[in-house]
Image 1 (cartoon, rainbow, N blue to C red):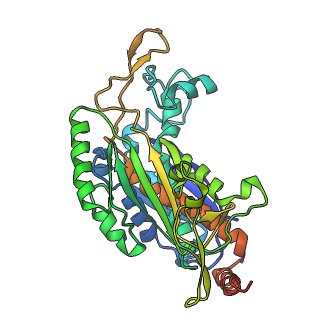
Image 2: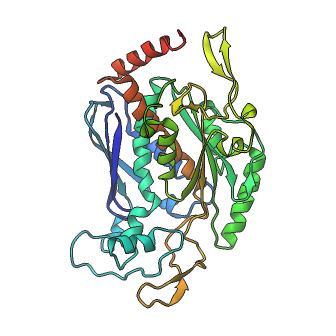
Image 3: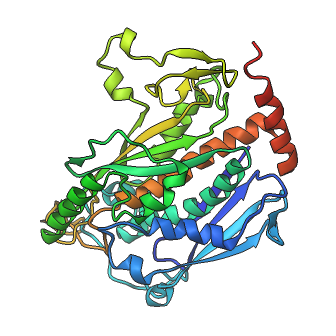
Length: 386
């Protein structure tokens, strides 16, 4: 099984991630990890922080001469802005800094302060910040590399920004990754892209923020990841939990989940056919999003992820209460974006990859990549011999 653990704060010295369960012999380069982190910084509507804050990546262990060793992989992402925050975020006792006492509605600030007994919102927001997802994307780069050895690739694209929704039914394939990433909002629909950018400009002018929806697509997902036998082994449930864990995400849909809820059963399921040419079973649609009974079907995996507008505004107007004086005020302002929906798509890719890689290692096993791919090949060779 594959698992990972992240640590670090938004303005701390570094973020770290340890990934355990990768088989030995997987080719890994710093450039691949840095490339994924650079994709996370993409998107029209991001704040100036993305222009001057770099992700300085170091692999501390688990990789030698460009290949995994089968031991845990340790990655550090240094914060290039650390010198400006050394006093504010010092781990040493006795440091005195001004407390943030006007919690932001919609953020973890107030509830976190109440839960842990803090009197300073910074003790909460530094870890609650979406900056933590940089460590997840680094881990996701490793998961994507492992999935690629069995022909699985993941791509995302923005289908809605604020009230603007793409009307196109075209979906990008892995071959379209550069086209999607070159879009200012990572949208595969040029007409919708222009409207989305206009909407972002309008929100920025008013100091406001926008949410949106991203569609994540998994191509070449093997049949049989996940399981129907236990509630906590169902693939769609694992994906929903992983995607919901992304900061500011408030909804996850597998396939056309919400739309088919309003249909009759005769129009709500994917017909199964026998493809005599390829000698395999196929579904003729993606209503179920590539899962049935908590397992992958081998068809296109489809998940849609809804992100709310960011709780930190460039022109703070959200009513709150000062936790010390109990007087009405407005929330404080940290550096923020007008929207982070395009970046969320890259994070959603990573979380999807980590879930699929975990289930793939559970299904196929193997201490080395050669054994992992051999087991996968043997399983796939017999799935249609029923």
